[in-house]
Image (cartoon, rainbow, N blue to C red; front, side):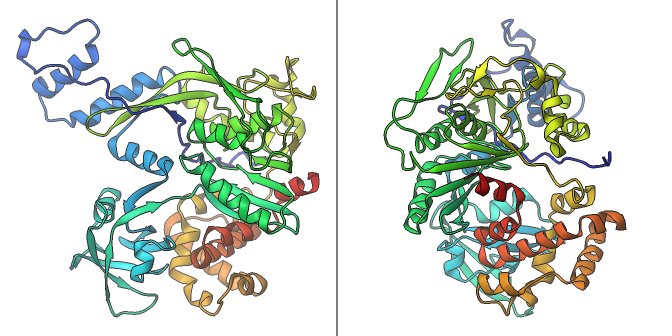
Length: 528
């Protein structure tokens, strides 16, 4: 196996429950050496002394955050400090929306390119289109002004009904068009795609477990059932989790009343059981759930419950292995900590949390270790792990043996493609070069396709365009191994095609394109 293969971890959404609470606030005012601290105030004391007495100027807020995070990370890998902007971003994503104009974007050469426009959002109504370049903002230069994430957020995210003046360039035009956009509440759906994979099988892709996930799923399910759906494939691959309540609500959709979905327990948290009701919208149909090594937390709650209760066939590769529950506590400045308060357990009583006894770095590198051992490429390598060679005391409702302590082991294993999984392929995705190339170079070739069906039937990435993309990528990656490019050529062409489809027709077109030859999806459909 190629030892240079790298696994790039996606940012995992931390599991959060409960209400926001202000804690760890500074007490009193600093009064020099006469100020008396209790023995429990060491962190507060050090922070104040640095602010008031240190020889040089320092960014005390940043220093405090790093100190608090180091303290928390010595507890477990998922207790973390969140700076204000990151806390806001995570909470907006999981709360199902934000205040803004309704666009996704990519920053290329200090210019903001619009990569998606939310349907029926303010930007769409004002006439912004995918591929537009935002040149001016409120009649002042915007492109080429050393843009960063903070400036971009400040520019477009604000209170509802406030207006922003944008100067844009459409496509290859050189004439600046002025557009006024009123900011509004932008809803974020948890469902990335929902379509009929064949005449009787529906496919639903969930990206997260947010406040609106159950509602979003019910709407998608109703639409699929109207099209004749009898079987369902639920795709949780790369879903890093979200709210515990969203996971249990989703599990409830598939179960009759009175089934234990999961339970939580901690030293300071008494055992809390979560049971299904009789309100499920899909209690009897056949179900398969897709997972992989990036499926974590709330995804594992749902997959673990469905496996333990023999309600679904789990297809793919072993999940991440996060069995800890966090509660978020907010500070007055908008920053917060996510503190682990409990472990969760599947219906059979197993904890799927993988070990973190050897520290945070080794914990997060565990997926790379799996790859080096060959686990992602061989079902036998899965079972050779010491975790799974031990006798298991856990069984499903029908008596099948299941494992604890390291994620959810699928019922049907599907190997990753070892031939096309090169460092180059991951770096192209990590640097967002598929999207950048589509925005800058592919819009002309897309213009002639008016429907996704026509595009899907007739468009393919030619050898010339593939070579042009590799040359384009060298501007960022500098050195590209021709052998790796050749090994990953088919996957690179597929992602070029899928990204182009997403640019013009949205997420559903993206997943339809990727899934056309997806082995894991095919295995799941065969099993159903």
